[in-house]
Length: 486
Image (tube, helix red, strand yellow):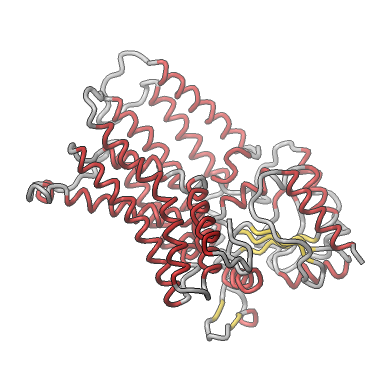
């Protein structure tokens, strides 16, 4: 959802910004914020008007932060990749993980996240001042956590708008954040109003506990981002799935009344809705268990770590087919070959120089893949589209594959450090690849797929995320046709 280069229409740019904001809601890493938002505002004021006000404050804070970023870019022309930096650096990811764990512990009954009574009892109109502060804090948290998925979208919009009118990035970020904030604002207002309904019963605590399990599971995503970006190899795919498996089993036991937390009442019988939810939870646990032993788990591929070369290989014809001879599209191993690995047994390169050199030697076009360890959309594409037999065949037999990680934190050797004209030094693999994407293609979007000839000339317009397999096959075949033209 990035405007095509050369688009001069401000209206079209703002429309695309608004659509991008709506699309950001559907990204996998924004989903965990929905239960957190609902549960947090369930603890809202008993005053219906104040509940609505807090919801509006929450939405306004989201708009304020994104628009503020647009102001910075509009006035300075800097900061377009702030979202990507936040989503991949170990410090914010560790903070987000701890924050999720605190919320999960609260939802499970370890303690209550409440505003001190001294702040609430000051004066009539100031009675809920603490609550308003909490709503603003939740808005900030939502923006920061969502940068894992919105960072590339926001960065692309800011890069597209930079260099033009100073008002363009400001308006772009305003319309993006407006679309992004509306659903969350409604979610913030709705549960607060629901809580004021009479005879709500103890079911609210059960909802909080279920949400606690969900938040606990999704909090692991931030540890996984650190583990992959810095190649720590601690939280492997198997360990990650094992933790999710245990959580799913425990959730099922809780729903059946076999597990109780601090604020739970006795459960005299199991209602049909609880039984159905328990059935879903146990079924999901079995599904996760197959993933520990190598199943692809395509439906949740965007939320879990990718397979490594050491992962247990489940019987899969698609994977073994891709591991066959690639002598027509692969030369000898290149740089960083021991650090990165392509999915489905594909062989390729992780620097432009190595890939283009092999493409020239084999007289083959290049499939250039801008990707990232924390890119959920990249994982979706690799698991749902690249795994298709025809796509695999084309990548294996017709293209030299180059994958460039734009968020990797591995430091390059001294002679590979890139010094920009402004004096800034690019010292990591991710910084160098990201800057190349910006300079060459005017975006930081991931995934971004570019088809090149072996001289580096773009054959057809680049392509982003598209889960339609036939569209991707057509894209690859169009690149082949353009490469073969005299």
